[in-house]
Length: 279
Picture: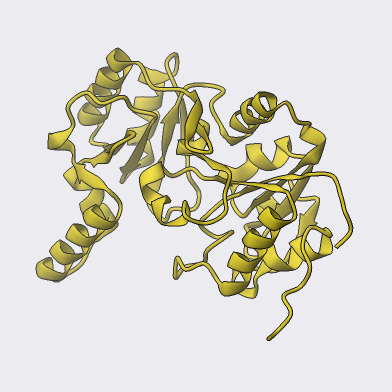
């Protein structure tokens, strides 16, 4: 491996590092370890909260960007955060409740979720199976029912609803307060609420400035439109082969799919790691 300038890499999680089985492949693990060994910096960059990625934090990442850019953590230290104002949270709750929109609150300790939102996620004809799925989801993702929310600081509010009219009505009432995004990756009408200007790309800029490094040395790996700001911000934008066509318009490179170890393959082509040598 040739000696090269340190690179700073940002990886989306779902559809990029892991596929539908949510399991990191052996070659992707190898690639992340090799990046660390070769002196590069690696960060998770996800729309999800920390509670959804704790199982990945034992891997050789130097930190993470979570909650779609509202939180940046470097080696265990939070260096940037954008919490929603408590008065605004209450306003959003009131608007969403009146519009019949289900939602959750993404916090530091837990995520707090409305019963309707989680039942929408796990619709099942058999109520016993649905109950079991919901209980497992709450436990595995450090998520509690909304009734247990007691004013903890909130990074981001996610929502689901059944009719576009519901979110259009809410958006009209909240247009001066927050940016309401629709996530095309979901089959249901769903998305996130954040302050205007809070996104993965802006969070990356905050981190690079803090590290006193150059944006010219940044590389992003993503697969969907919620990665768009990250891909536009970084010097090299890599989109997975399984990514949607709209997202591929932002790509400098389209690599193999996550199922075909696209991250590993592209890191070799970029000269950042050597191929794994079979024992």
